[in-house]
Length: 245
Ligand code: UDP
Image 1: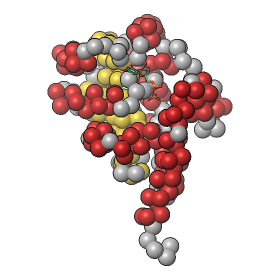
Image 2 (image 1 turned 180 degrees about the horizontal axis):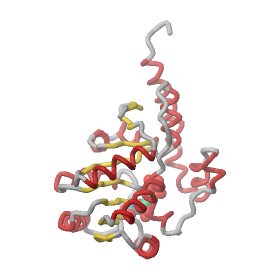
Image 3 (image 1 turned 90 degrees about the vertical axis):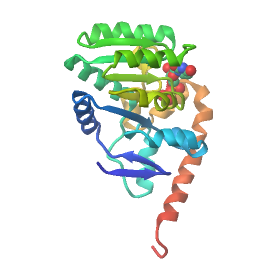
Image 4 (image 1 turned 135 degrees about the horizontal axis):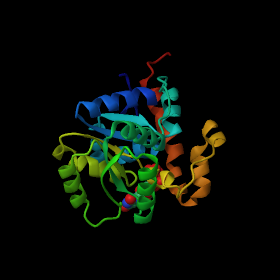
């Protein structure tokens, strides 16, 4: 599949549907895959932190979660097909897991959020085999890694926000023989019903980020990265253009 480079990070140009078909294929063949749901904050973190950049570059798939990446790809003249929001990816993967009786591990979020999420998964997706779970504030991430190693689940959701979730996956990925490992940020908060996703109209207008900012003003510091990101993309796209164009 085609890759589109935005500020040195190669993004996979899939629709959500295409990606899901490939992931199910990987699960059926017991392959292991590392998937990053990227946004401008992740791209900027990678620019500042070579080790984190290495983790992202090692992933099998990097897909655009934030609208900022779609805009970035248009600026450089190689538009990505569509946004793949992490929370929708989790929902679709849960449906697939239910239908195919897959073993899923849930790692991340606050203890009460995780509990609520597991209750709802058990009710809504009875076909899923819950291989295990741990909240994202455990004192022993290594113990979680070991537990996952012994259970060998088909899918592992890691919901601790970037860069923590990608760094954890990167550190342990080599120890696993199979499984889809995916960093899914605040998805457990949304899917447990703890945090509301933006209403559809906000999403259609590509203003989901603004809705989240208004609900959680503490996010503003992270949002400050956006203008810097856009400027960097524009500068990069000008550099790429041959002279006289
Ligand atoms: N989180 C966690 N462990 C930590 C820090 C954060 O499990 O040490 C969880 C937090 O409870 C929340 C998620 O990670 O559920 C991060 O959510 P956020 O909205 O910041 O992530 P984003 O989707 O923006 O990457």
